[in-house]
Amino acid sequence: MFALLGRQYRADEFAAAIKTLQRTGLIMAHFHTRYDVLLTPTLSKPPIPMNSVKAKGLEGAAQRLLARLSWGRVVKWMGGLEQTVDQVFGFIPYTPVFNMTGQPAMSVPLEWNEAGLPIGMHFAARFGDEATLYRLAAQLEEARPWADRTPPVHARTEH
Image (cartoon, rainbow, N blue to C red; front, side):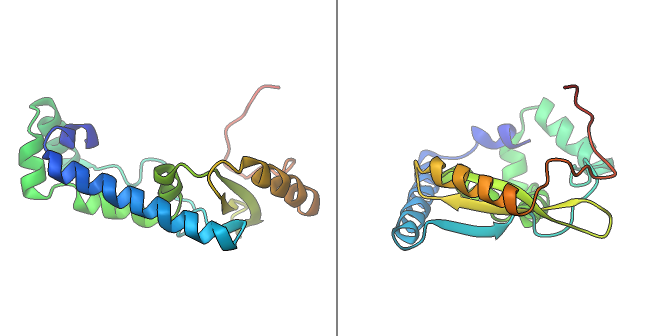
């Protein structure tokens, strides 16, 4: 659905979005002149079932139809994605910032909830400083090992 909207924005809207991303990067660069790492939660609430934020029923059918018809302009005009975008970014409010700024970041399962699911702690470092995160991950793994912990719902991997 997001690809559907890509061609519907004007150049000045695109430029304004890029300027916001650049400003965010500068804010984070300034933050990292004083601090080595920023810690945030990975998610804003406990894990949710797969596809639970995906548009369903009539809304999902309408989105698929509009995508097939290439009616991105109509979707933009109607404000058709605000609810989905708010729901998705409300669930992951911190991690996209670092995708945008290009900073290295990692999520480490340092806590577990009552259902036995990992709770990620999200660490971000200054641009280009992956080494700090690797050292931190090693120290955290030694202090609170998680490699052998398997949540009740998980994907199996072959070794």
